[in-house]
Length: 584
Image (cartoon, rainbow, N blue to C red):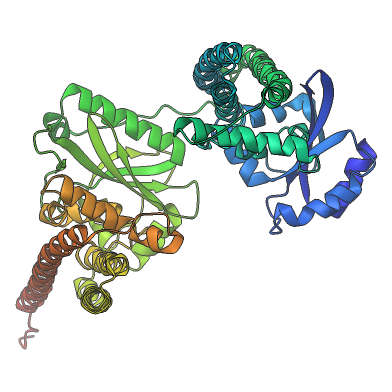
């Protein structure tokens, strides 16, 4: 087998190849998992003919081509199938330099818990539906019996998909579920092959039984048909149960093997340093014990996951000392949740990403920036990073990493850039808004009007955030942009908070409009939602313009104050100059 795999690696860019056994309906099978090199830009589907040609001498082996990144993500996300397949004893060829993730005992136990939860629920329902099938068969009610068999099969397939393959396909078509599982167990493809019209007709018949019986449509099933389907499907359901239990036995063995690894790792010299967070007294006074504990946990996990060099509490508004903002809930009767804004500077990657972390006790908006980007921004005297690193509260600083050199701000340059960015983005926002109004009044197209309105708001938010904060946002989803605008003024986000369920639904339609237009997966908004979104946006736009005007005025005052200070310093220097004496 090894020469064949080496030949395959010469023809296509292979990272590694795993060969693992499994049993299907009493027969031993072998499957090859061929991992494509991470640098390969060719789709796996394009490489299949070459792999088929190279593996022609191994008809007993089925195979799967999978990109390295996809497999890595599957293992990190806790896919049981990938975790069991990519074990050391299954490795047949290794050429790549990047290792696959190594799961700890806790992560493996989490996989086991979730797999049991998914499959055991399905197994209980499977038994109940099979008992119902036997009951209706004894009563010669073959239509209802076939429906029961369909439900037992569908729930078993979905249980296997969730527990072992970590895939969820909420579909009542057994053909769709067979197509999905066949990606991992190719032998299932022959169960109802299109080349055998009789059996292919049977699988379409059992799929029809779901809608026909449930919605009382005219539907007839012969005794021979259900007997043939029972003959075909019952062994497959039994195999699903056995396959799941086999996977769980192998997973238990991995957990026992991994149980000693934390002890070994703890004795190594290069143990990870302890993370120490310093929450200021001002912040602790505003949080109760549970909230402080939740914030500490979130920050600690964030530092570990993103390999942070520095974590800074930004606060509420840039000109205030307050470090906590309240997140306004849609239901005003619900207790408000404290909301923190953090800047995390990471050494892990060259890209930046930001997200919102929601907890039952506290809500955190995290702005993540790569260390290299922060250095470049400081060189350009970016207002956001200068103010954050100067006036923000440092919660964590990696002792092994040097501190950033923070330059003096250039307020004249800041004002010029802020005004230029605001004018440009405001122009684009007004253009989109004009097009939205035309779509409403001339075309009566609420779908396109909502999409254009969302684009107008997106441009306005980007311009507003840069003009007032100096921050280049790294994503343009409206919910995230709206949360960041709270750093400028809470009134901006409040425009889309009050009003109950109608306002909530209007903002949801506004935020999803790009996805709805591009992929046509969302229902078109109605006239009421569009009217509410338009009214909220008008209030938002008015507050945004006022915020920018105030911000520009503050920058101009700073420029005047600095120039006055310089004049005073220069005049003071002139007064202290000693005139040379003529007396000798």
